[in-house]
Image (cartoon, rainbow, N blue to C red):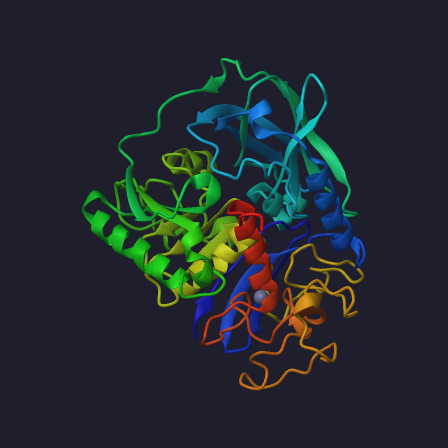
Length: 471
Ligand SMILES: [Zn+2]
């Protein structure tokens, strides 16, 4: 039996459970749910994003410099109350994203940062993001009032003039509550403008074009000693090769830049507190995050982003030098996977699906609680739904013509190409549906492919970071 712990973030309520899904893979997990009222909320919110994008006539060069401003944020509190504050600011050498994509078209994220021009009030920039604190806030200790603090990081383009920054927290009814609001002048002396560490060595794996026109993946070395640099290079190359065997990454390979950043660790491996194992490593990664055995994450989020800033990047993959199974992801921020477990490549692609494209888990388990995704509430994730109306289902354009909804579970071969609504997703066996019977986000499909909904969501993310030329 294989042991897994593939985890999601962005949850409001906590559920801990042990679950089993087809193929005898055994997951021990923790999650909660997004609360988004009723089945059309996703469409409504997506349309809001589209409308904003269409309305946005802001020219990047009028308001921003080609640099990034990194906000190193702290969130401290429990499940009832918390504070969000910027601990420090830092400048990065370039803005790695497509300059005209200032307003996010995606309805994702437990939090949303908005940047307004201070003088005119014009909305300049938005991004959704998740945090480890939001996940902690769903745990039993947090519900019992134990306050903890967690780091998170968000980047915006470097403004030319004073801005108003706000961070909003998504509520159960999908409305937002502002948890931080402040003015910032780009000449503020608190903004660190230091060079990145030259100790960190850049390893180029694939370069396809300018960072603003490509999806930029950076692998960070964690738990590799100076003498293990060659192993890190080989591991990154192996993971990259595997990624581009899987669609839609395969057919879009030429739109990706991939590199590694190597920082030698004092010791090899990672922390495994339950086994009494502690290693002095570059990013202080650890199993047993939030007291879940296989949950492998990096809590030193600021240090991680400082290391990643050595290169332009859109998403971070922390590669942990260990043979022990594990991984995790904070959606729209970073993901972590072990380098040398028997399932490392599969876990890497799965976790990247969370980290890059906000995909939900599609597996099913025997949960102790049944309100992870509450009834009558449509999850915001693009690959699971409660909607069975073919006119409104998220992946309506991909439905197999004439397919009945819900769709009958069949054999792997009989349903290989069928796109419908298969019951069982988001940890629940009833009431939530996935687009295909097998998907990397949920099953042990031996052919390792994403379902239609996941493919489309990943493709949309690729288009966001690497837009195709206008016809
Ligand atoms: Zn899927």
